[in-house]
Length: 363
Image: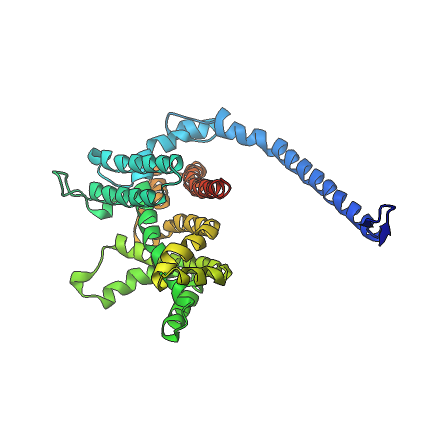
């Protein structure tokens, strides 16, 4: 419906039915939000005091298991007693300074990356160097350090080492797979497509176990990798398929003009992808990349099936002590907080990169 004013300007007036529907839409969500908010507050009031009492008021922070059972609250004394086993597994107590140094180095690199968001290349180099230094430090055999069998490694350093090394290897492979799936040559695109579809059709635990079991069968004895490397290879192969799909979607959404512009500037296939296409594709895929990285960190807990005690595996091994049985709730809550901090850091770091990128675009 429209009407003419005296000055000749035509103004569009919404139909009565459309206007009524809009007014209803403005208020339709309000009762729902009120009800959900009231239910949330009711839940907090109902269970909040009990949880707070169990966590802190009735908790036992020092003492033995008998005192924990007597108080009835959370037994944080169990976490304190088994802290070294939970965080570092069966690593020799006299050499615990080595995994502690590695974890501290990772924390320092993580903090630097948050403070220097723009330095992406330097951040990648620092993560790789930190993982390499941590591996050499924990292995020993150099600079007078006593060698430590990798069977005694465990806990948080294993989770961090596998996560960093696996993601660094999986992402370039995912880029190549994404480009291969988009290739115009069937000899390249078909195998890449089959690989991605096959990997995405099976659980991660299957890939880890098959990698662990098959590599010794197809390689000579002198070339068989340690099970730590085999676990990293399995998770990297699995994660690369998901990186490929995240990047392939962004490649398809990229305007054709970007490829034509890079070609007009004289870039070849690899030059145009390295300097023009892939930077834009990665920038538009940061959230999917963060989700895949978080999933990788959580999938590291699957290493228990091949005898590697990551953070969750080392934590579970502490429950075998007959003197401290029955305190699994505290244990899983403590480990869950560590995983939560790692995953929230990844999400916050990616969000910082996105904010920095938007700030540069609007400068």
